[in-house]
Image (tube, one colour):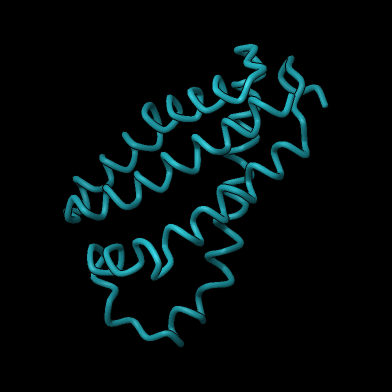
Length: 140
C-alpha cells in the first residue's frame, strides 16, 4: 500500500510488530532480564496475581505501540529507499539511537531510576528496532 509517498508492505509491518513483541516476551522473561528489570524498578515484591491482573492491558498497549513503531519505521525505510535487510537493520539502530535510547535516557534521569533500568529497557528497544528494521528492509 502507498502511504506518505512510499510503498509499505502491511505483512512486513505486522510480522515486524509481532517479532518486536516476541523479543520483549523473551527479554523480560526469567530466562533473561526479568529479575534485573524488577529490581531496577522496585517491583520485586509485586505478586504474580497483581501482575496477571494488569498483564492483558499491558500486552495490548505494547503490541499496538510496536505496530505503530513498525509502521513508522516502514515509511522511513521506504522513503530512504532501503531494499536490503542490513540497511533496514541499520535504520532500526539509528531510530533506536536517535529516538528510543535518548527518550529512555531522559526518562531515566528524571525518574531517578538506576542505570540498570535504562540498560535493560534501552537494550530491549535496540534489539527490537534492529530486528524490525531488518525484517522491513529485507521484505520489500
